[in-house]
Image 1 (tube, rainbow, N blue to C red):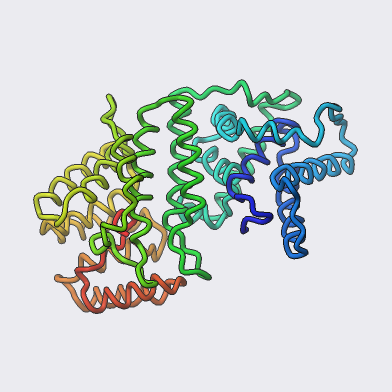
Image 2: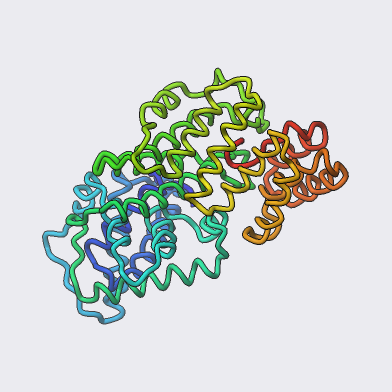
Length: 410
């Protein structure tokens, strides 16, 4: 859904959910979700009529709040709203931004898995669709629905008939790790956008929203892991201006470095700090900082990157990390070893995974050119976004060595 009434949809969705949850409690989570959707639909109608409220965000809150109240009345459920909770109540709440506290509240749920908590937050704090969540988490949509509904039930059972005071929530280091996973997932969804109706490959609003909330979280808690996550975001954001040139997608090593955003680049190095306990965000930030600092890249540099990816695999079992590791192995002459790893990795990824197929095709270039070309063509036909199809067509069939089409390289 686009931003109606000139507001930032992603940010406003989470603020509405947090504000309404704080007011109505967990018994009415489903009603809150429905009310938020209805308020945005009503805002769309206003936009088409050329009518825009003076305070769009506050208008949305009032509409959604009244919608929840109407749903409660229809259910004949006992609920009374205090007279002081007037139409200006959201204005004050929006200044403090309860999204961080709401994430903290979700994290405290005892009967939900960490995965379920993350999925619930992606939907209700950032307003992500089930399809968007599925694309980035590699979890099928039906499973995501089940996880979110279980979390909702768990929330209602654990906090039944109890007042939710989001203002009192604090997040400990264990909870911080879950919060960081949420910010990381949101940023990745935005940074690798596959909107088929546009030529956009980066959802700037979503990336910047993830960055802003992570910065807000870091300012509150000062965890070094969050600091390195901010560094990682900054390095990626710095490259956005150079990702497209003359309407064409430009791979990392062919980007015009003069177009990189110097402020974000410097900010990335400012946030980058070696923690006492090494984590994946630090290692990822170190890897991308090395890519951005060294030019041209030589075999010795690739060997350093391979070592860092080996280290990352000891900390995280993410198949995407292994996928990037395989690509880097090919750059130091170990394509056959990489292909052996890919055989096992294929079982962990969804069928016809785009990045997997492209990395495999790149590795097969010298060993089996015919199979490599076939894979590239197969991927191109499955892609829905025109700009990516053109990229594969122009690069894969002309010069396969130019393809660097994994998340870290584009």
